[in-house]
Structure formats: structure tokens, C-alpha cells
Image (cartoon, rainbow, N blue to C red; front, side):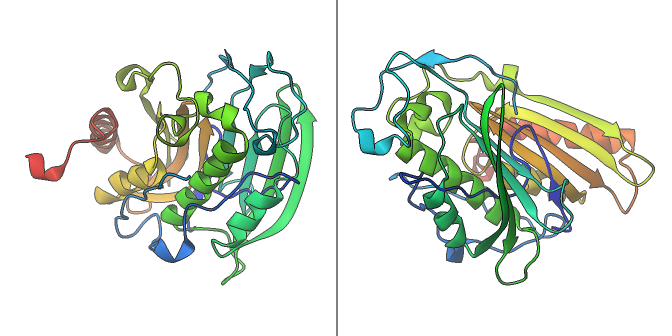
Length: 291
């Protein structure tokens, strides 16, 4: 992007992975995406069809999936607690590629199916690595657009990457559905409780030098959220330069570097931006026609 994006778990980027029983089936086709820059025209909401970083560390005990073929490695027991799935799309850390990171405890394999699905979106995985820490196994990928060899700068394609990864996780690791917002519509076991949007929504804006500001947004996750956030911001003529978008369980966290006419956002405009985002996030189903 002229935009680099980051957030609590999903830096604007893509991640592919693979495993002998990988994640997948791509629910989204690259041809359906509109190509737009974060700082230009509004983008349409992206939908995901069934088939089909917030800091939430709560785990839930659910039965093991009945079909062993749907579980990537099948190395855990029925009484294992389900870890919190995390998908990070990072537009900040690499100037030449979008970095995607996927974590689901120690349950993920090589994610070959996920990588294949991302390639079907017109993407190349130029670098991949795996590392372990106390939170589990982290699959990390550097991704570029096959057509240009550059990082992904289209918010709709970034959202398609995110939803493709989540959809594959739901299909190949059905136990993750109780820990993901998308599990309510597309998963085997819906989350036991729905996130209260008013409580979960937090918006903060800070100065990040004379030429840009740093916007933090945290809210309940849902399909199309990344695209909608960028549209709301650009609709009031604020440019999104880069950022990170994280999906962590039921929550989504975004960090955007933003500016207005090449300068940091002044206080009155910060208030306008915060109010616009808060209004939209708390009323995601409100239609323009209802006014």
C-alpha cells in the first residue's frame, strides 16, 4: 500500500501456510475484489459465503472434532483447552512485502492448503518461517502481489486474505469456531457468548510526529471490518498511510498511521474521526436508507 497496516494481530498483510491436512478451501475469489488504495476511493464491503489483537486470553473446553481428517495434526486430546486463534496482517515491518502471522496454540502444521488458497488470490509467498514461544507456534509469511511483486495495498484484498485464512482455520480446525467471531455464522460450534460492542470498542488517536497521527481501534470482529474501517477514515478525507490489523479470537485490533493533507490530525478532526468510527462500530447494521 502506499499503506502499511498493523493491528493487534493482523497486520495488513497475508499469511499462507500449509500442512499435510492444511487449512482450506478458498471461499473468496481474487476476481471479485476491487483494487483501491487506502487513501483513495471508498471500497465496498467484502462478504464471505458459508462453506464454507485483542488481549483476550480466555479459553474454552469443547469436544474434539468428530472427523480426524478435519484436524490438522490430531495430536491433542479431547480435554485440551482450545487456544485463542490469532491472525496478524502487518504493513509496517517490511517495506517490500505484507507480513502475515497465524497462531493457534501448537495445532497448526505447514499450512500448505492456506498457502495455495492465497496464491489463488494472485499472491506470492516470498518468505516463510516458523518460530515457537510460550504462546505456541507462529507461522509467518511475507507476501507480495504476483502482478507487481509489491506488497498488498488494496484493503479489499487484505480483507480477503484475512477471511481466507480464518475460513480455512474453521474448516480444518473446527474446534477454533468457538473462539472466533466468524464461528457464529460459518463454524461448527458458535462462540458461547456474544461480545458487547459498546464495551469492546475502544478508539484512541495520538500524535506520531508533525506529519502523521497514530490511530488505534479495537472492537468486536466481523467479516468486512478492515474494509469498513478504511472506508470510514477515507470518507472524511483522512489518508491511511500504513498499519496493522490483528484478529485475536472474538476481537479485532487495528493500528493505522493517518494524516490529513500531509500533516498530523488536529484535535477537532481527531474528535470527528473518533465519533464517526464509534458510531459505525456500535451500529454496524445501520443502513443509509434508514435515515
